Length: 361
Image 1: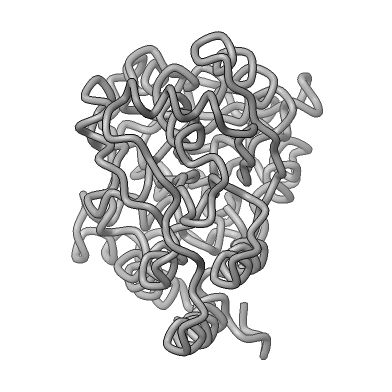
Image 2: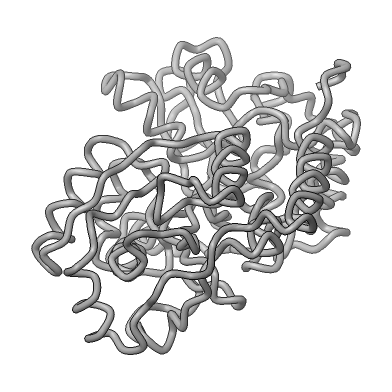
């Protein structure tokens, strides 16, 4: 984190300036495709469109399950490309501005959402009016995005070296002398930026001074460190993503690894769908996004990214099982506010503020 490689936030700022320059020159995508005004009209139009082209973090199991359910409900289908990382989403943005994007529905990360909106390449939708049965939390106030996937963060421990009774149950437990120099923390800090809106600045920074004093091992990679905890190189990890834990135990079901849902349970949006103006199947894309936010939620258990705001979802059930407080900063916190919080946190940890964003959660 201390190297000379430009930080993710610096690269993003430069990229945004470049995109705005392109937009100013008048090279934005074509006018918006037609979307029906009522749900019945949308369904009728969708049935005349080609299969939806989707770019998201979905993997094989979730694709199969959502495909089956979406076809059963609407008689519609989709094609899918897996996209991850900021650079891929930047490419998608460039292609959309140029009017050559091969997708109708795209997953846009928090850092890039304002840039996509400013570029004028997305179709706003009256989501709440069309789908009043879906919790309004899933829809961005500007009407451009639908949250379908959430990242959940907690505590991990090696089950061979730590007894369940002694395992941490709360974030304060990570400060105990028992764990001094024996536990890991993800240097990106996303679990703790997710807690920031609820804890506030003073409590957050006081906590991170104590966390730093407990001498954790800071890891730049999430999955790599989780593997090390499973092998006993470190006995506990304070603040790692549930989906990263799931990736490890899926590959090795016998791994000596347990995930703890803390009493303050933080979330970030991990998947926010938007419909691009150049979409060939805008109505079908709209239906698929809404389906994913509610009926499709059980499929998200395959990647550990279900919504805590859907009753009966994996995340909701995990939170209720320990009476955890669900913490999410809302749509406005994602982006600049989260980056600012992350900079303050990593500065307390002793890292440069411009190192924020490197690595993945």
